[in-house]
Image (cartoon, rainbow, N blue to C red):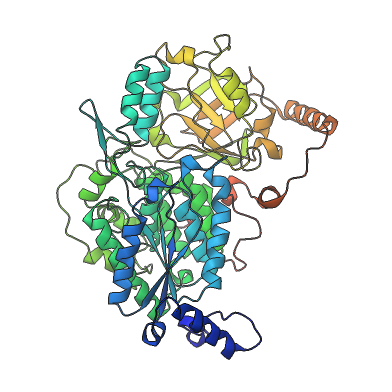
Length: 583
């Protein structure tokens, strides 16, 4: 059946009773119990995915946003219908929200498929929410548009501007180093999050909002408006209007989520100094759309794409400054010669046409030109070597320049429990030029790949004034974090990767300029250690068999370079590679 032949409105996806007429009759009877008229029920239906929750302050403005979306839908002549989905907040999900991202994607996809809607507004914002919703949209392939909750406002602590969560980490590091006392850390805690909304820096949530504009799933200018502003409410109303347009034109995600669109998104990720987590998320979304992300070509792109956005953690400003400076329109103007401007967006216009219609540029200090960048290359570099045969990444724009070419002795922690037990032990054998290594925090090992890659500086070194060290793991770190942190080492330790063979005292070499991460061990020694590890594993009693979602997760999860999606969720039709080798 062609798209134009598919039923609309209440006739979509009728419950199977063996009698389609009775199914529609019953559906209308029940929904009329909500007071809806035949006229209302004859309109196109726009579903609104509601991720509001008392456990999710990032989505604390959900009621106001949904009301604005409903207004836009009604003004455009359609029927808005809200429905709930899983809500994930980074700080309110155990063991980590990443463990639940795929569950949210599955649930959202199935709710889109199961319920009668002609288009869907995906309302979210917090770190894993937008990725999960876009994964669902790519799989369901129903007309869809993303609406983010927007960033929180900044606060003030003793006349110093602060915002979550780069400043959360900065003040906590000062507290660990005894630079501030318990009274002050409690005081700053009151000011870091002065409103609802996502983190006020270029963390994962803001990164995903920006790259979603570049992908074409958020209209230009719709990603950066702060959560508690009139701009955000107007964006929400316009999102409702656009959703009705999508329902009528039947513009589906597969026409928007193309390989060139993902290349645009990756280019923007590098230019905004965005979160390393976005690599994993974009790879997962692309996989759902049948597109492969080539990390080697991504690194080539990184060498030619400077960081242009002066936001924390790579710079000095906050998301509300970025929005006031013109937001993504200014970034895209600066990148214009490097973009695929013919990519379609949810507005029905191309990216180039949207850029032509955007506000005129004006003088500002937050978004730089390519001639005067914040950082000369892209924010993220891709590494390889005998320690990471499948690759690893580092956020070079937020790293310490003095540590980006470094050789040091490994200080190894087997897991997060080992780290917690020993990191602040005064007897820990550790020096400032050592390299901290944390194993078993990958997709399988943790499980869920938590944001534990930002290992704390050992307290005794922090008290000596040490601010940064090279740290390596198979896990992730928050997009709000900074430091010389090597992440996403693949294969992970729990899957038999070389990272799992490291011992304290081994010599590790990091060269960001050479894109290299290696350990000074020959192949024979690595093979000997691998054989010993296998023998030790066989000697251990079998672990209890997992059940439920955990069993599904452990059986089906892929590695970081595959997006940490379930292996059975990749699109069946291969639709391209991004970035292209000749891009």
